[in-house]
Structures are given as C-alpha cells and as structure tokens.
Length: 558
Image (cartoon, rainbow, N blue to C red):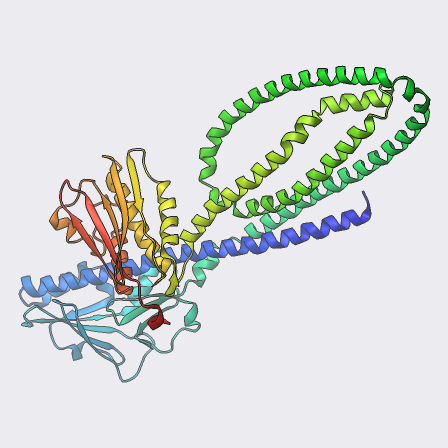
C-alpha cells in the first residue's frame, strides 16, 4: 500500500475521531444536565413538602390547641424544621433579627404581605406571622431559611451547594452568589413571589464521565483506520490483477488468432450448452439461497423486537449508511459495466484455452448474471429502508425537542408525532382512533402542547391496560378556539376524585408509580397559553379531557 494512502487514512480517521469526541461530549453534557435537574428538583419538592406541612401544623395548633408555651415547644421538637425555627404566639419583634424578612400570612387563602428589611445580611431569617381563619390568634415562626435549605441538600447527599432565594428580582441575602444565570431556578417557592436558585455545577461535575468521549473517539479512530487500510489494500490488489489480466489477454489474442476461425462453429454450440448448464446450476443455487433467507428471516424477526428499543441511538449511523449507499450505487454500476465488458470480450477467446476455462468457472461460481440483476434493486431497497428509519427517528426527535417561546406553527405536525410515539405503548386490547382536521397556523409553544397531549394520552392508556377498550382523539375549531378531545371508554372516576385530579401531588396510583404532578403540570401549561382543560367523567362511563387553546390572531401577534 502506498505511503499516500496511509497518510490519507490517518487524516480521515483523525477527523472521524474528532467528530465522535465532540458528539460524545455533547451527549454526556446533556445527560449530566438532566441528572442534575432531577436531583435538584428533589430538593425543591422536599422543601415545599416540609413548608406546607409547617403551615398545616400551624393551622391545627391555632384551631385545635389552646395557647401555651409547652404545646409549641413540643411541636418544635417533633417537627423536621425544629432545629431551624423559633415559634411563639407573642409579637414578631421578639423573634425578628436585623435583616429578617417579615411575612404576614393568612392560613385560609395563603396570601401574604411581605416587609423588606432595611438592609440585607448574608443569611437572613424568614419571620412568618400566621393568622387563623378568623384572625383571633396568630402564630409567629422564625425560620432560618438558608440553614434549612443547606441541611436538605446535605441530607440528600449533594453537599454544601450555593443557594439563592429571590423576591421578584431582589435577592433575600447579601452578597448574592456569582454567575446566577448558570444556576437552576424553581419558581413559586414558598410563595408565588419567591424563586429558588440552586447551583448545579458541582452535581454535573460529579456525574460527568470524562473517559467516555475519549474512549468513543479512540474506538472510532481505530475502527475507521482499520477499514480504510483494508479498502486501500483491496484497491491496490484489484489494480494489480487488472494489469496482469490485460497482459495475459494480449498474449492469448496473438496465439489464438489462427484457431479462432476454425473453431467458431464449435465454440457457439459449446457456449449454448454451457449457458444451459449454468442456468440449471443457478436455479438450484437460487432455491438454496431462498431456504437460507427463510431461516434467517425467522431469526431476524426476534432481533427486530430487540432493536426497536434502541432506535434513537442509530440516527448518526443511519445518516452515514444513507450517504455511503448513494456513493455505493455509483461504484456498483461501474463494477457491473466492467463485468459486462469482460463478458463481451470473452466471446473472442478460445473456449478450450486455460484462461477461458478459468474465467468461465469464476463466472459460474460467482453467479454474475443473478448478482447483476438483483444488486441494483437490493441497493435501492436499502436506500428506502434508511429513509424509513430516518422518518421514525425524526418523530422521536420532534417529541424530545425543547422550546421555551411561543411561535406560529403547524400544531398537527407535533400532535401526529406524539400519536406515533404513543402507539408503541398501546396494549393489544386497546384501540386508538384519531380524527384530525386541517388547522391554520397556531400561536403556541408546540413542545409544551405536545407534552400535554402525551400526558393525557398516556393516562388514558394506563386506565385501559387491565380492562381494554378504545381511545378517541378528535379536533374541533370554533372561530379562534381549538378544542382537542381525548376520550376513553374506561372505568371513569368518582366525583370526589375528578374534582382533585389537577391538584399537585394528588394521585390514585400506588406509591412509587406516580408523583401526582402530571395533570397539574398540564393544567398550568394550558393556563400559560390562555386556555384550559375540561374533564367530563362518571363511574363506568370513561373520561374525556378537552384541551381548549386559543389559536391567536396572526396580525395582532406579529
């Protein structure tokens, strides 16, 4: 193999390795970002649970217990917030410290008046003045906010990470942590005016696997280098064989010139006999190949089910295959033209010569006519197959994309992709019927609307898993309001359950099977789109969720 081929192989393999490294780094960064988001969300959920448990206990103390120092201290000792709070029924001035934030809150409607301190301190407290329903009694609680949050992160194994609580655009503490734009924000913390910022850099640094990109790049470079070396070696061997064939053909042409005329008639008859014999062998070979392909198809049927679970991992290899198949089509056509030229040139050879016999045996053994007839169609089938795989992965990508802004879009494209993904989760005893209408462009966040449709559709599938049934999806457009109905004929819900399905943390599933946040999130997303969700259900009559979405006026929105 020439030196230039070795250098070219090294250059191409280096480029491939660099591309694989960049891709691996991006994939690893996305994975660690998702892990850190889930872990910090646990901190946010736990803090909300303990906070609302504090409000519930305070309301019970005010309504069911007489005033008394003993009862308050017993509650403080039993509460998980006990080490971080002081509690009293006296005035808030006795518990407040310079730099504390004062909140006067009604336990009935959870509305609060907030008093901002004159100056900010490094770790301020949060003094809550909690009023009962009739405002006959008040309970004052001073909460060491930052110490409490740091304890939660330490209990959950995250260590002492930077934390910041914001009131609108103003921090509660001073000084504020640096690089606040890189922290993860959780809105509606304790009150709608508060936001919780948590630093995720430490968690991402812990879970980021640096060796994975290097390993993937090294493997890609080694594999591509090996393949390129093999290809260039085969190319050199073909060129050498081609030159030898040309030399031998010239020699045979000189020696067979005298005998060619005398043996023309015998050669024709013998060729016909050889062709008939070759066709018979070809039919037998086709029958054996058909039996072999039948056995392989049975094995591949089982492998197809396994490969469906990793379809999202093959997008890049499919792109490489699709690109190479097009180039392979040109290469295959060049080979077929070359074989045709050799076939036509063989008619001029002496059929009893060693070279002709050797060429004929190779022609029969390699089954050249059959290969020439089926190879182009097989290549075209491969191209169509890669296009089909690309379309399936495109639907998966359309579902997973994230968007944070409203835009004009063809909403049915996203809804169709959601339905295609959901069909893979349908049990055998559940049927899905879809009736979509032609829609104008809709001003919305298509990713969020798709998430709402998917959450409601999965709930319907889970409701029918045990008993089976039907799911119907339909659309209706009335003036500038779009209605998307998702109806099932499952067991339905009681009134007391249906009235609470949109409450956060409410779920009828077993512990560990659901968080109770799915429909609450759907309700919030539809409200952000100036729409809503309506539920119609009854025991034994199924359930129908209707998503109401204003499509907007394009000239006004622009």
